[in-house]
Amino acid sequence: MAETPNIVSSIIKCKCPKCREGDLFVNKNAYQYQNFLSVNDNCPKCNQDFQIEAGFYLGAMFVNYALTIAIIVAVFVAFVVFNIYSLVPFLITAGIVLFVTSPVALRVSRSIWIAMSVKYKPNAISDYATQNNSK
Image (cartoon, rainbow, N blue to C red; front, side, top):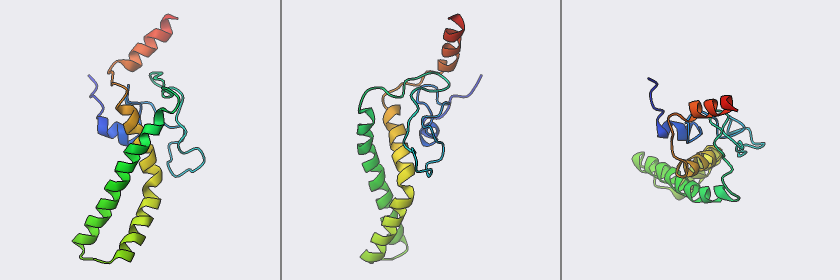
């Protein structure tokens, strides 16, 4: 019997929340800036609709806000651990870290947002395959 895919792993890898195997985004590389936020219309493995409704992914901006705050807090904690108490180096470092992590954070926030709406089904791929074979 196959092991159930971990929800955290599938969110970080931007996989389909229903089958946790199909890719959520058209481009696998978050740093390929042309269409890096383009979501597939359907899951290639289980045919889950990723375009649930118009404006569905607008809610992901709240998740992205929380991720951005978590990143800034992590930079702040690192500064406190290393006893660096200067505002300008903190702001420069936080800006650079946010610039580098923003593409990944945007994609993960969309993955989290859709994972909150779509329930995992262990037999989603086989159900889709049998449904297509019966037609």
